[in-house]
Image (cartoon, rainbow, N blue to C red):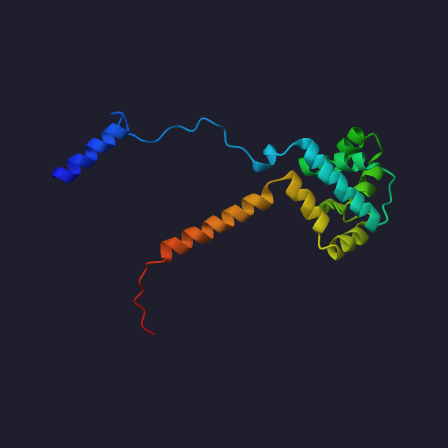
Length: 168
């Protein structure tokens, strides 16, 4: 070992207190950025979106905005219409119409009257409200964006210094 290598080894051992490692275990559980948000803040944002939608579109149900907020939360939690009806205290048909009011269409709604009209309203609105609901209640948008950025950055860095010898 030369003098520089020995000096670096001594610095490393001093920095690691002789343990030979500089990494530590992560103490905190990894979580979702959505989990950090206050549920009352999210509910307030959902409430505002529902009020905006109600002003722009003719809603078929007379649910209060709080009922719509529960419906939207349940929809994104994966609850079916029967469970949503029980949670909100209305019948299944009201839940279906309220979901369609909020542009929350499921694949199995194809046989339901009024779904096509709801899909058209959602498309005209650019799915803006449905996307806003998803952003508030899931971290899919954020994780998709971050994963895409990291793949692009990683690929760019990995291929940056590659020399290719291609003759055409």
